[in-house]
Image (cartoon, helix red, strand yellow):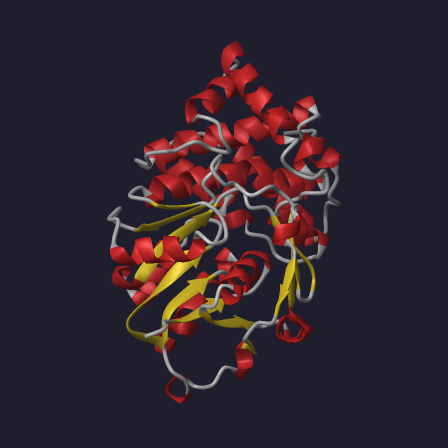
Length: 350
């Protein structure tokens, strides 16, 4: 029997995954609160764009406005629900989808941050799976249009990492990884929390820096002061993650030890990190900016409390100083409050 799959939250990442899975013949229902986006994805269809011709296609999607979704008893239940909302909406999304899950159905956290525990609080750990999307760089410039601004990972970089909270590699984890393999490279991982903390470190070093400066990573990496902040944010995240017991993997292609070493002034580690930063410039467009920068530009709330804020809060719990994560959290909060205007100068005092 064909499994019924829902995408809860069809922003850049949820819409991208939903569009590909729709094209590949899966039974997908895409649920979102934005009327214009829902209408455009349905007709004329979702327009997906990437850096190669094969990534550029249109697909008509089965979409429904969240407020118009029929009552749970009036539609067939879903076997799999990808939760792809902002981190601060996680618990509400889990509550919303709970009555729509089939017996034996489960939710997949397809999000930034570490939100599996929030979903598990509502649905139970037995109905919760995690999925990291690493170095995918997506944007939603307008209704029904999603753009990817970095090359596919392929054999060089694993984009989707799917796992259980307890580290088991189960049939359902392998099933989800298999579904996503038509989009880009995948891994059924036995180290979900290590993967999560590694992705959190990557988000912490890139998202708020771009959000604060309103510049892409290529521009920021050419500024020595901003580059130092970027490295320091990641190094603080590594220290906190290790205190949490996370078995870290590479962070944007860099070893955690090199990021910490570069932050502490080790010349060899610094050269390794800077060489990788410069090499990455060739993989992404100059216009590439992560989701937090897009949120600031559009005047929307950011996930700062769930990224750098989480690192800072867990750091305090372990007695680990996180001055840069504390500082950049304060900068983004001030920008959100309208008391500071974004620009490179916002980071000069960090």
